[in-house]
Amino acid sequence: MIRCISPIDGSVYAERSPLSADAAHAAVTSAKEAVSAWSALTVKERAVLVMAGVENIGKMNEEIVPELAHQMGRPIRYGGEFGGFKERATYMAQIAQDALANIKIEDSGKFRRIIKRVPHGVVLVVAPWNYPYMTAINTVAPALIAGNTVLLKHASQTPLVGERMAQAFYAAGVPEDVFQNVFLDHQTTTDLIAAKSFGYVNFTGSVGGGRTIEQAAAGTFTGVGLELGGKDPGYVCDDADIDAAAETLIDGAMFNSGQCCCGIERIYVAEQHFDAFVAKAVSIVSSYKLGNPLDPETTLGPMAQVRFADDVRAQTAEAIAAGATAHIDPALFPQDGGAYLMPQILTEVTHDMRVMREESFGPVVGIMPVKDDAEAVALMNDSAFGLTASIWTSDSARAERIGDQIETGTVFQNRADYLDPALCWTGCKDTGRGGGLSVIGYHNLTRPKSYHLKKA
Image (cartoon, rainbow, N blue to C red; front, side):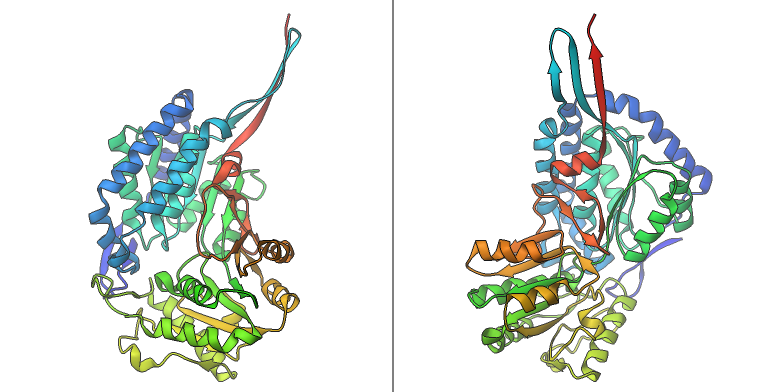
């Protein structure tokens, strides 16, 4: 069984039976057969249907918000994900006509030469639990608008999300074979990919999961997009607004109990501002309320699973044993235990510690002083990951100059932990490959097809 254990109380919140191998292959077959009719619609017609489905999700939001709290622990006070969900889908719908337009090389009396963008066929989207609606729509919306059919395999922690999306799209008029929510075990998923069932596979999750996807696709020539781990840094320069930097970077480190792909996991501060920054950070975190996410007063809910919380506890304990200083008083968070994990700020940390090297994906952040930009760049690049980096300075030219030296997918100045759908969402190193959203997202979800037509 695919089972969701609620982090609120450890109870079984939902369980579903995975498809058998035969049923999974049947789902793929029906999706392949649906491609022709779906892709024959105009871009505008497909976009209208997709956006109607998006609006239907908005109508369900009052039910979805507590469902998310039960499934993965985010406090209801934050209102769910519909704002970002709609923003991303809307932008991709708005640019679709231009992004998918033919590239005309020549249309003369002798030749018509054009490049068209055509759908891959069936796209498999393997979505994560931490932002289950927003991460799914990043690929689902543009894949459908581009003329692909989609199979969505959602994380076992958030099984109701795919069902909600299917319900919303079907009510909008998207055919059932065009978008399918499927429950698959790991082996069946691997076997389908290895059998060349899909034209494109998009996976968001762990580095280990990404390796499994790549290994399954090896030799099939299936397109693969991977957004994997992260250890995103923030750098507070000597000319930064310290108050704004502390407020945004600490929120980026702690929001969603630190379970954000582009969350801030390590911070480097110009040494003259280090003590002031740490004091502000400690004040912010000390004001949080850890507790049941169904309580409107809760600002920090449980982590999605006990084992995730235990791993962060282990990283933190190892760092303290190795000489790190913990700044948050445990007495402020008596609820700590099981999936409920108190937040922590660490100083006197080094890159020899796991907490500064491995992905934590929890409410802990290490802060180090640096003497100049060169040291900050060296430390930011001293990582196996590369998703985003946040630079805090009043000088945009300086931010761009520093950004040019950082091995990362996105560079922020004076903001963090935000996905702009107009920009390509991408990473490097162990964070993965490919890119979603923006015009580049459409390019990855289609293939170029050239026409060289000699007129009679």
